[in-house]
Length: 172
Image (cartoon, rainbow, N blue to C red; front, side):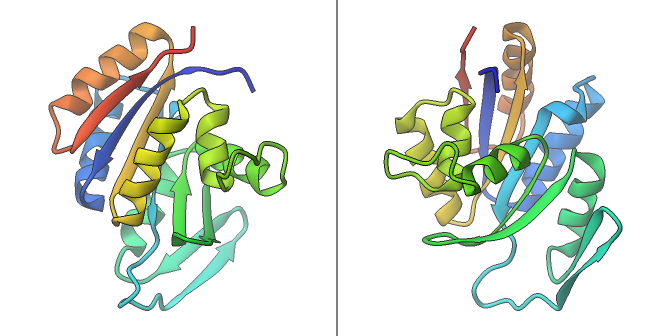
């Protein structure tokens, strides 16, 4: 996959991440260029269950409405158990890169499938470490891919939201 420019924001809650995604879409961003990743549930919670209806996986549990909405809004969804993280859920184009990482095509340098996916998008290893720490702390990542102008605009929009911080990663 060709490395693209990326804007990555960290959010403390799924509500903050959802509001940021809606704001991006309201400002004309293509949902197929937006990804979100976070824990599926906390260790003290128990999902009621997962089921597949055709090409859509449904998740019942405390954050089921959030993830179901994200999977419907963004391109695809993925639930997986990542050692060291626990249950992770992702939606958007990052999903396909995680799957490639799971298949072993880009693993290396001590990173798992998620880290390898981020590195393959051109995100520097030190930033990947920061993002992995945020996810382990139950935060959410929102990632926007696009041209230099698009990701700069995305960063400006994300900076106006409740995000902890937003970074630009330019590859062009």
